[in-house]
Length: 304
View 1 (cartoon, rainbow, N blue to C red):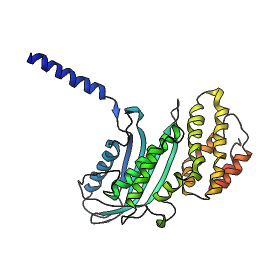
View 2: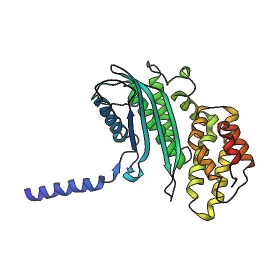
View 3: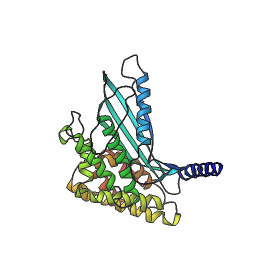
View 4: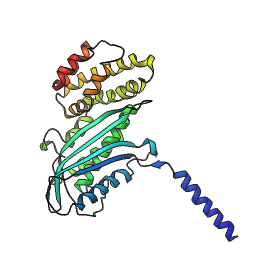
């Protein structure tokens, strides 16, 4: 009887292991800490911090969804630390996220941003804790904010406004952190920070932006693998970009729009500079208006 009981226990353990194999958390974040500008003898603290940040991002369960290992969202967090005063650190944080395009080896850049209000307190071997409704530390609040932003943008590219729940979580984090001593959470801290990301993306004025994210990626990029669909896909991408003109009329020079073109300008040029031609006259005019810094490149777009 005891042998039979042991057998069932072993079978149960094996079944549990096999059923959870291949299940992973949402993010596959590559983390890099740059600290070469900070003087000091204890360099190990930066290695410890890098490991802690990587484990925090990749081991936290950010959603109620089930992800396979190959479904994890690949992204990069680059912490460029330039100043240290005891346990206080500051510098900038770069967040990069690219979305895989269906049936291709290409990853389409979605987020390319630099947060210049990156400051936090950290004791070596501190545990990085996070609770959605409580601001436990500025470090984990910032990391969680961008984790939800990445997940939200990822979902928006696969379904229409599919990332709303995760963007709302980022908004909650922002609200909880606004009473802290740290910059980047308030409208008074500048016009390119976490506050304005949430202000923009949750505003009805940016409904066209979120629709564009879905049309551009899911209905456009994901369909270009089929040769017979390439021209139609380019037309969908073109029309989705034209819809941003309305956004710009309501909120000129918005941070969200700047973020988009920081990530997408070269990709847009590449899309419309090869393959089957489409009428680019109106698109060029709109792109030059929305992203004037790349005007000369857009003007040449489509020319051999």
